[in-house]
Amino acid sequence: MSHSHSHAPGENHSHSHGPQPPPQQQQRPMPAPPDPAIQALIDAQYVPVDLKVDGSIVRCGPHNAVVCKECNLDFLRLTQLATILTQNPNIIVPPPSSVNMVNKNLSTMVNKIKEEGNSNFKAGQFDQAVIRYTVAANGAQSRAPWEPNGVLREEVSTILANRSASFAGCHDYISALADAEAVVEMRRNWPKAYLRKAKALRGLVQLDEALDALAIGLSFESENKELLEFKADIEKFQKTLDETKNVKAISS
Image (cartoon, rainbow, N blue to C red; front, top):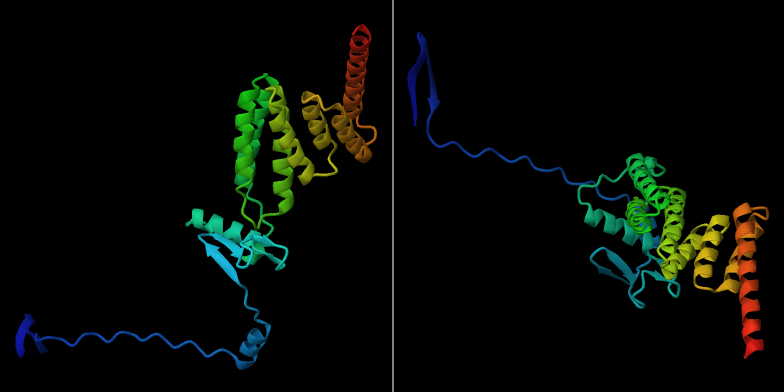
């Protein structure tokens, strides 16, 4: 319905108050078809992979393995990335140019907690030191997969070496040995890793194995004072044990 009326003194015009047609929705532009040459190249290089996806875990289909040597497939880093993104939906994935970035805030936090563990250890509070080192290790292991592996390896190996010493202080030599073994795997040429392993083995009275660990450490650093001193201590202790056994054998 149309009519005329006044909107202001001396101003008249006509318009309609009837039902208006709905505004037309703007149509999305159709995506351009793929370049035939590029599509042909993709098709030629495409190799189907039989895999299983369970949440954020990707496994080889035939063998149900994240890392499958038989099929020459490795979904470990893909699974790690998927797990991180699933557990942290608001995480911002950096662009490729940021691949070598290090999360400095995380580094600061990890170092702070590790230093708290160091303070506990120096005070003889070994159980508390274990707790702080565990928190620090968990923090370090939460690094994104795109951060340099060397940063994670150095952080975690140092923390676990300290935690191994703390477990030994608690007389939990099995846990001390487990941490030391993990450190050896991460940093095979680090003498302190073998010192921690030897001390755990000494606590378990596995003296020959402890001397073997020290020998490997000394092969990397032959003049290492800590290794040499601990080697002398074990040899002295071993000699005492042998003498005691001989006395008992004679007396019996």
